[in-house]
Image (tube, rainbow, N blue to C red; front, side):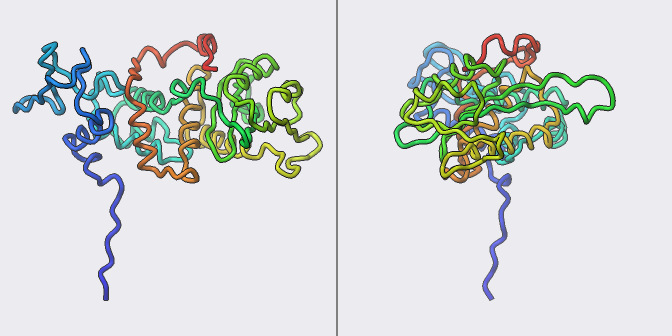
Length: 323
């Protein structure tokens, strides 16, 4: 009889268990051409400090005479959490289709809720690839884009008393077979929706929407504009439908209601970035869990997030919308 190989857990890999291996793993992805001084940008006159009491991953630049690690200038900066635990949480958040709650991360790491909350928000910041593709529109010739909006929040019938808070509005653009971008918007008006579509949807695309009046004047911007009349129970007419974006919303809402239970207005956009990232880099596009986690890790560079920023007040959440 042949010997059956034992399955090996993903999190048993060295970078998830050893701090030295974790630093080597992160350095290989954030410094593909070797160490770069965070202070002056030097790449040549750099040496690794390997004393008995030296913290892991420490380098010294002999040009500016300052020490640095790969953590600096990333979401890992000023964190006391070991880097191999960071990599574990990044992998879990990238592999969990509907997200991982703060409480779950807290129980897994046996840390404070404050640490777990701040940790997950910094990882969501790394997942935000909108700055890098901000003016690169979705779609193009022979591509189809679907646009729709939905409301996120509690239901009135689920409350024993009191009036529920107003639901928050999310608008999403999905390229069939491609990427997705979602935005927390202040209202569903033609002006707001058109500003998002004009910046993020390529004019050579075919555009699909429902019969909402705000979309009726955008057809001339695209190669063609197809609509379905949901009010008449019409959901598909040939290849005219918005089922792709509706499918994305089903994942988003199951994650918010099932894993997070509640998402405040001030932080909603970061959660949207997380769901956008996982959907854009999905298995159907040839990206597995490990590759998706590596992409999130590469996004950690240049995105320093301090504790005061994600704690901004509710009223400030829409003063500078990301669209």
